Image (cartoon, rainbow, N blue to C red; front, side, top):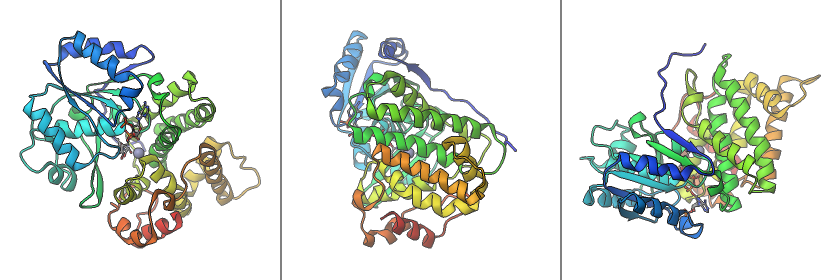
Length: 388
Ligand code: NZQ
Ligand code: ZN
C-alpha cells in the first residue's frame, strides 16, 4: 500500500542549452552580496566561470569568491566557507560545479549562523536547522548526485574517518538550479561514468525495498531504462545532446525525493560506500559500483520477487522455463555487464581500500533498516571482503 506523505519540492529548475541566461531572472531576487562557490578549477578551463561572472557583473552584484571545494568536501573547508559568508554578509551562495560544490554550499548555508559546532549538530547529532539559512542557487556541471534538487549535503571528516550526509528539509533545497547538459561535456570519462552509476544506485536504493504495487516502482523502472539506453550512447559519443540531456534529467528525478514518497527505501550501498569514501577519498559513484554486486547478490534471496521484477522489467530477461532465482540472478548479471561496458571500478582494492581497513570501514557504516535484510556488522564485513 502506498503510505501517506506530504510532498513538495521548492527548487525551480531552468533546463537546456540557454538556461544560464535565467540567472538574470533569479539574481534580482537576492541582496547585493553573492558568494561564488566552485571547485578545483574546471569551470575556469571550460569557460563557465567567465559566463557566470559576466552575468553577476551585469547585475551589479558584489562577488566574493570561495574556490577550491574538493570532491568529497571536508569539514575544514566548510568552516572556511562559513567564515567568508559571515564576514561578507552574503545574501546568496551561488554554487557552480558538481554535487560536491552544491552539497557544500548547502552545508555553508545552514552552518554560517549556527551557534553550536555545525559538524556535531548536523552530522553527528542529525539535528534540524534552527538558525538563519543563506539561500543557495546552483549551476550544475556534473551529473549524478541529484543535489541540485534535494536537501542532501554530504561532508567528510578525515580526522574522525566519517563521511556523513545530512538530508535537510525543503528550506535548504537550492532555490533554483540551472541545468545545461552541454556543461557536462567536458567531464573526464571517469567522472562521467561514476555519475551514471550514482544515478543508477540512487534508483536501486529506493527500488529494492518493500513488496507493494507502487507507482514509484514503475517510475523508477522507466528512469532506469532511460539511463541504461542513454548511457550506452553517451559512452560512445559524450557530446550526444539527446543522451546527455536525458541523463541529466534522470539524475535529478532519481533523487529529488519524488520516487521515495509513500514507500520504504534501503540506502545500504551508500552507507557502506560512504564509509569506504571516508577511508580512501575515492570518487563517490565508484565506491557504489564496487560495493553493489556483492551487496545485491547477498540480499537477493530476501527480496527475490523484486529482483525478479527488476530482471524482467529493466533488463528484459526472458523468464520462460527458469526459476525465480535464475531470473533474478540473470538481472544482476545484466547489470554487471552494463557496468563493465561503462568501465566502472568494480572492487574497493582499486579504490585504495585494503583488507586491514575492513573492520574500521564496517564500524563507520551506518546501518539503515529499510532494505530486504537489516545487516549485521559481520555481514557488512563479508560484503566488504567480497568487494576487495
Ligand atoms: O573541482 P572541479 O575542478 O570543478 O572538478 C570536478 C571534480 O574534480 C570535476 N568536474 C565537475 N564538473 C566538471 C568537472 N570537470 C570537467 N568538466 C565539468 N563540467 O568532477 C570532479 C567530481 O566532482 P564532484 O562534484 O565531486 O562530483 P559529484 O557530482 O559526483 O559529487 C560528489 C559528492 O556528492 C555527494 C557525494 O558523497 C560526494 O561528496 N553526494 C550527494 C548527494 C546528495 N546531495 O543528495 C547524494 C549522493 O549520493 C552523494 O552522496
Ligand atoms: Zn550517491
